[in-house]
Image (cartoon, helix red, strand yellow):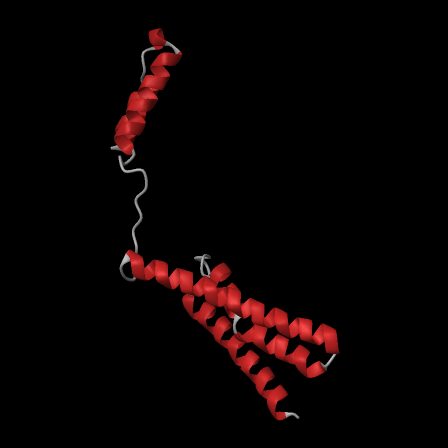
Length: 137
């Protein structure tokens, strides 16, 4: 269908000049583009549920970055190594895997199993660092 319209655009009347190109192009575009201004297809549930999941994800990301930032500020104030390790553990536990999901989730070349392994290993390392700080004192 698009090929037919492309041929009609290419086969315009030379006598009509630029106006002919515009008319032919408008005709081809009007036949190939949907009339609705924006059509969104949602996979995984209703649109409301998907939007709620996205909003929740970004709120959790914001809160985890805020908690990590507070740990870093505490370390800068006190220069206590356990607080720095808590900041590292918190980053590896929450914001790190979230950023990985955001960035790597949009790359089709990386398989889902590698994405899951990366995020799970980051969370595991974060928990190990936090547990080390808790039980080393």
